[in-house]
Amino acid sequence: MTRTFNFSAGPAMLPEPVMQQAQSEFLDWHGTGMSVMEMSHRSQDYMAMAHHAEQTLREIMAIPDNYKVLFVHGGASMQFSAIPLNLADTGDVVDYFNTGVWSAKAIKEASRYAQVNVVCDNHAMIPDESEWKFSANAKYIHYTTNETIGGVEFLNQPNVPEGIPLIADMSSTILSRPIDVSQFGMIYAGAQKNIGPAGLAIVIVRDDLVGSARDITPTLLNWQTYAENDSMFNTPSTYSWYLAGLVFDWIKEQGGVAAMAEHNQTKAHRLYQAIDSIDFYTNPVPKSQRSWMNVPFTLQDASLDSTFLKESKDAGLLNLKGHKLVGGMRASIYNAMPQEGVDALIDFMRDFANRYA
Ligand code: PMP
Image 1: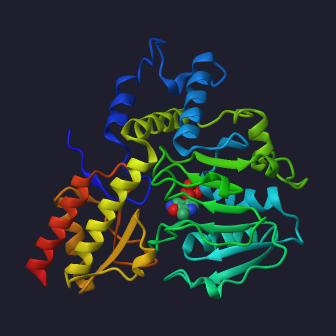
Image 2: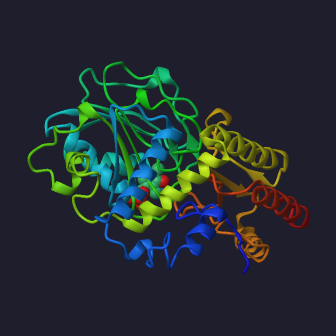
């Protein structure tokens, strides 16, 4: 078996010990004689395992008791619709930062259900705070903590007007560093980067924001449905939930999100340092906004892109092709990417530049 270093933006690498554990108990989970995949979600075994996963997540993120943790379907994108349907009426104003492709998708969907005010609009960098325009009476303020495609990250939480729920799409940063959950009304994230298999999403929502969805809200988009039924109103994504639980255990064993942050900052720092110090490569993002998770970079000569991709693949460094909207390369270095993966990429980049510059 050869494991590669997979730099995909998601689905992405998962921690090897987690994959090994899943493999070892794949056919017979804890002596039950069946796989988790074959188990009823109503069985005691499954419910205890699901509960453990939620408790571990609550522990590692220090989620206060007045927040619900929901395990939902439909990835992060389904929440693009759920958020306005749960929190606003048709005529209500909702504030959205537009800092990249994912913000824009959230805005497009919210515009179908409410009046969107764009706080700022720039996909290359987050504009200075002085340029942000909040509305006086927004139902909520939405932002994307990290633009997975552009590689632009809010490294600190934005300063926003008090008393308005702050909603964050944390798909590509959740569990990568400590955050203060109490500062948010609702947090959501697709699982396929730092949590587990795709399809599952995690919603962390303050109690008082549950229960006011507008009448037409589909049952499965209403957070109340999940909150009242332990996320088991219908059959949840059982295997993804199980695997997420193993990832949460792994993060806890590693020293929690503080340890993840240290590891992630070191990896990102080394990679940006290499990009900045080798003339051949460029990252366009202002230094104070550079993502710890997704590092886009371009080659001096774009005609070498395909050679770079072929040679990097041959070296066991996979999926470095940048998103088609921005071109160039992108290295996604989530929690499960080891330091050795980033070091191998840096060595490869130096060698490639020496040979082709
Ligand atoms: N938001 C962000 C920041 C993302 O990176 C992604 C996926 N790459 C999504 C939302 C959409 O997630 P999903 O595919 O789970 O709907």
